[in-house]
Image (tube, rainbow, N blue to C red; front, top):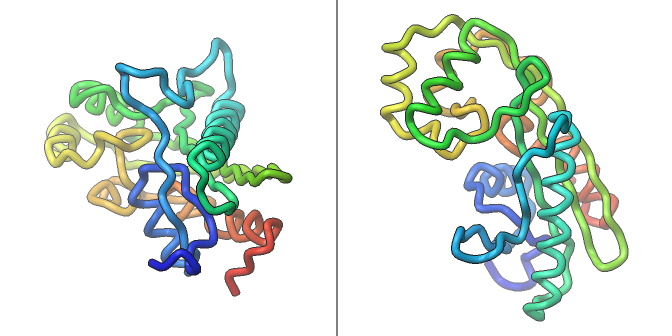
Length: 206
């Protein structure tokens, strides 16, 4: 991709978010933040005491966009808006993030099986003169899952970097009986809401 094709920076390592931006024809360049445990992370993703899932997702997405903007300015990059997002799972008012390990993934899927849960994706976009956010909230219902189903799925490795320990666009689709809301939001970037944010920064996709 040439420099002239880049419309925004994406402050995310998520391959799914890249795919979704490609889907709507948005040229972008990845802007990586520090996540190395040996150095201070650019964004603290630790939930705060009594923090609501929606507030948490919005805070983290906003922090990623702000950190990405500062990184772009510090590195002397071409001035383009920075987009960031955060997806979290909400069950009974609790925040469920990415699993720590395989056993944690098994526990999370055991909680989600046979129930409905919320999927919240917050999106933030920033440049030197403007900062905008939006939030997409969806509901996913899973069929009852037995231990063999869960462990077989976890063994594929698919859950390990996913909020809620599953990928709606992957093998876990076989677990899902109902979706209410934004499919792309559940994947990690709600495209209708993101298109509205892009328009606020002068980027029209259609």
